[in-house]
Image (cartoon, rainbow, N blue to C red; front, side):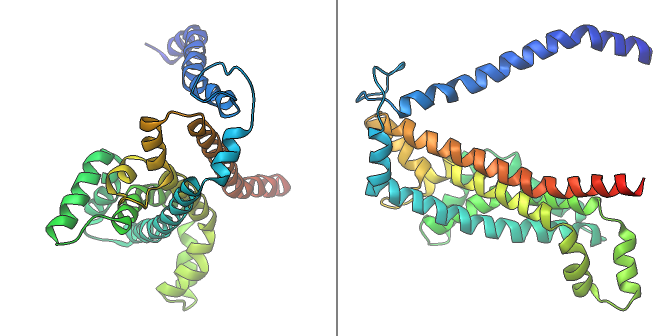
Length: 277
């Protein structure tokens, strides 16, 4: 089949593909949209559509000590895990191009958590800590979340490094700069936006992670996803929808922040190219 015939076939299939994409998007977004009115429901239980509107459940979430403690715990855990993931992922991304031996092994090790089910990772961490004579807790949860987020950082920073002209580093070395100076003054500033964008993604992943949190959070120190699971099994009140709405809003804000951090440089680059032309 020639290229022209392939293009013609794709054009004929394009309406069907677009239609399928719209149906899949509706299927994924519809449950999220159904949560919004339930968050403002006046009913005592999860019912759709709600019989009336009220801010009762949002007020309860903001004033409840349990929800506040879980939210604070999630912020602390996700923030610490993000710092560890950014340091580990950025270090791996910077080390891979310089390694003469073992680069494939390190790359495989860094990307392995992306294909390992979170349940397997949670059980592995729990058993490993238990064999070492310890007990699973918040530190184990932070380690697990950092393990999940580090591959995202590594891929993002590696993509940013791939766009850098290698001649810049060689020119810096030819001027007498050592490897630490080249790293701090040339490479890291050029991939700073990639690091910042990956940090935002990592924080969102760690904050919303539920499987590791459910199995590794100790009693009395539940994170927000863990408390959501527990409340859903006990009461199923509209407070769950209210918390879910707040989490969705936070996710949208993080997504906008990531686009802002990673898109500014592209915009500046496009403007500079227009000026040069």
